[in-house]
Image (cartoon, rainbow, N blue to C red; front, side, top):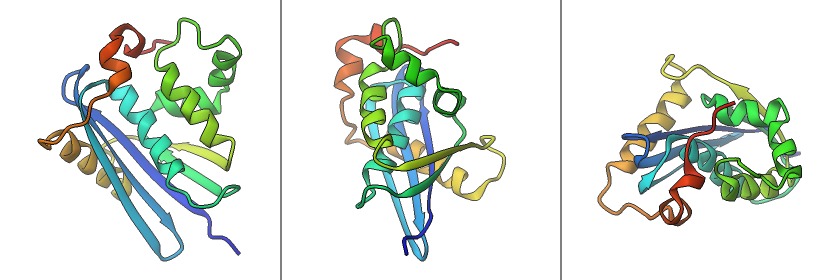
Length: 161
């Protein structure tokens, strides 16, 4: 029988936009994996969403029961309140980060995902670890390029709902 999969995620940016990174902690039974990456110019919301995407993409089998813990109201509310599905129906017109939302929906639909919002910097150990990973990621010297954001910054601005 498959284990319940728990994923903690966090994104961070130094300046918004600025250098950014994400951190992910995946847990299934006795297994634990940490993931992180940094980008030279991006936004906090892009990193929050990318952390969720990368966490789900790291799963080896489809159809998993997954609980994602995130301190991002942007991501959690967009999914749990159904906004992203309305955005999708309108072709993401006038929405930020359509590249990442489309990528998210592809992987999201391969699993049974539940989101839980956790307060950031509230001493939730795995959330704190994700924050450490995200910050460490954007402080690295080998930062990646968020091509979508850098080529058209207007599409990568923060969303207000």
